[in-house]
Length: 102
Image 1 (cartoon, rainbow, N blue to C red):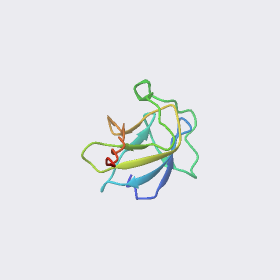
Image 2 (tube, rainbow, N blue to C red):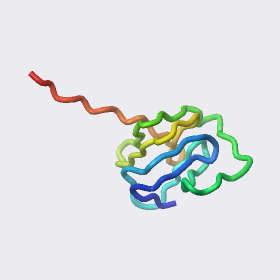
Image 3 (spheres, one colour):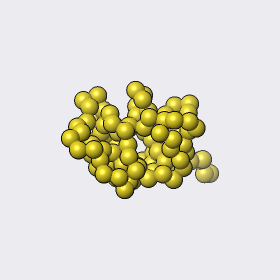
Image 4 (tube, helix red, strand yellow):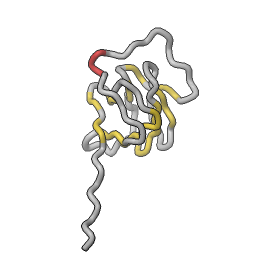
């Protein structure tokens, strides 16, 4: 699926909701809990359960990235499963340190 900046998506297996801040070009397999995310208004597929390998969880208000791709996702509602692109899990984006004031 191709994701666009500002797209609002949700997990099919838990309460995670997210907004795409910086997409990457081309087709992307963005998953949460091991299953593809869907549009915020779409109904999740019935009977899906999270994969055991995707139980890291997400934090509300935090940004997640994938190293060296520029992808940035903002979680608007926390969940119990983790985000991934294919087999690579997204990591919590570190805050930039503020400049020292003298």
